[in-house]
Image (cartoon, rainbow, N blue to C red; front, side):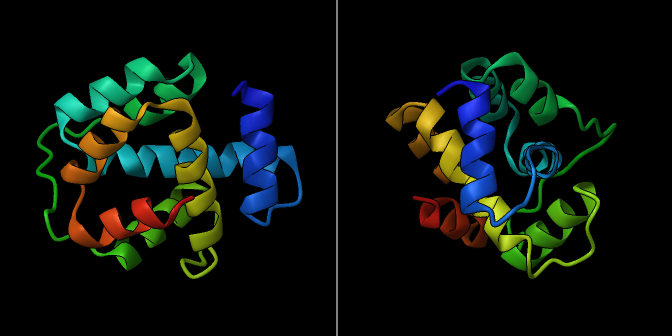
Length: 131
């Protein structure tokens, strides 16, 4: 999948109006996703993604970051919404699932399983919902 198809997919599945919205939501969800993954999995996913998406995934830096193993899906969606320039965590479900399903078309099945194992249970449910 090329980037134009990826952003078109996010527009359509994520219920967004423009390509610019899709780019902003992709960036926000990927930044939030990067904080939910462990370092090894994050590097493996970044290596499999196009440079633009990998940059978003790796762009959040925390001096001392301890992943929350019990991160709720509501917290994840709220963070993704805020990083995407939105305040509605309830709407964030649509673009988040769109980004996740877009990522699944890019990365292989083994890496998808590795990602699922690295996520908290509720965020893993979001990951698995994305078709």
